[in-house]
Structures are given as C-alpha cells and as structure tokens.
Length: 330
Image (tube, rainbow, N blue to C red; front, side, top):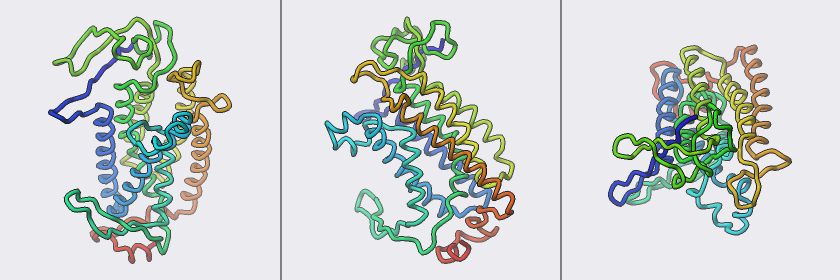
C-alpha cells in the first residue's frame, strides 16, 4: 500500500500557506509559462493568448466553486445561498472545466477594455464590449490542452496531500490504496511512522486501506502529460490535443468515480448520485461525446488544408498584431 502523506500548513509569521493552494498556484504558473513558450515557438499572438488565459482562469475558478455548490452541496446551498460566492469553500474539477469553457466562449465574442486602475491595489477596472468579429478559439484551446495535463499534475497533487477526495475501502493488499485510518482525510486518526526533515512532511501508516482518488488521478495525469509532451516537437493538426485529452480523460475519470464512497447518510463524505451516477460521471459522458465530435473536426481540418492556427499566427519578425489588423486576418 501507499503511505498516507500529510503536509501541514506552512506558517510564516501571521501568514499561513496551505499546501493545496501552493500546488494549485504552481500548476497555474507553470501551465501559463509552458503555454506562452509554445505560443512563441508557433508564432501565436501573445497578447491574445494572455487575454484568452485570463478569461479562462477567472471563469474556471468561478465555475469550479459555483457548480460544486449547486451539484455537490445542494442542501448546503439552500441553507446558505451566499455560499455560492464564497470561492474558498470548495472546487469541482468539472465545474472548473465548464466555467473555463464558458469563459473562452465569452472571450470569443467580447473583449475587456481597461478604463482605470484601483489606487494602491493596482487592479485594472475594465469595461466589456462586443467584438466586431468573433475570435477563433480552437487554436488557443488546443495550445492550452497540450500543456494542461502538466499543470493538472500539481492540482491533483494538492488534492492528494489534503486527501479531499476519499474513496471506498480497499483490500489490505491493494497496490494503489492508501494506508490510513477511516476516514482517510482525518490526519488525527493516523499514526506517524516516519518523518522527513523537521516534520513538515510526514509519511503515516494506519490500520486500514482506502482509495485516494486525488492521488489516483494524479498518477494517471503524469502518464497523460508525458505522452502529450512527447508530441510537442511535432506539428499536429489543430484540435488534436483537445480531442486526445477529452477521449483519454473521460473514460478514466468515469471509471474512477465508481471507487468513490457510496452515500449512506446525508452528512457523510459521499458525492451525490443522479440516476446512479455522480455529476462527474455525467460530465464524462458529455466530454467523451465532445471528444468524438472533435475527432471529426480535426479530420475535416486536415482534409481541407486550412489550419485555424493561421488566423492567430503572426508573420515571422513582426510585432503582435493590432486589433484592426487581427480582424482583417480573421
């Protein structure tokens, strides 16, 4: 079995850094850096890419929390409607995916124009207006999906160290189970058997085995990220990474959710079921269908010989395109 890894909060004076937040932030930073690096290599408009990423991330975090509250905690939402705005109270991966999709579709048709800055804080105050011509989103989405699994490793690493996705009990000799007490996400009931450094990282061993779904998905994501990274030097048809990621992730996540804790009481840690499936499993069905549609789209792009990437690529040696010039190319 796998040891139970406990990473406590890091306290620096009055500031407390949570391991989950640090790992997620690392993933966002690394993913953005990789996307920018690949965009430079492929000659994409970096200003457009940065705008695309901003809309995607903001909408992704909003959707990740709001849809988590709506589908996973409906009773809590009825009791505390304002919890929909408390973004620190929980995130859903598929909620984040849906929010990101909404964000990039809005980016396709609208643009944010800065009109001022908040003194001292440095925040930009934008106003939104409809674009004269819609922006193509597939080239940017494909670029992001080519590096997203690398960033997702850190996100799921955060889940694995805080154990916020406990699964069902496993047989004691199960290779991929975590050795812990039940519930697995309760460090107080796990005995420390080894300590690294000054106790900032503990390997703990309990008396029962349980699946940790965050850890399992992180392991799968390492494999997926490695396979995609091996293709970075090749010029694939635009949309290939979107199709590949959807078709690879959907069935694996669908199967993993059968390892989740089954609901026994209304106050336990189990995810709700709708017609026998979790919200994530229903989302996996939609994602897999979307992946099949994208396979057809990629084939049509390859057959036509017209790559959407050309609409957002800059001629070599030229500075980033102005809005008007970009609209002409679109």
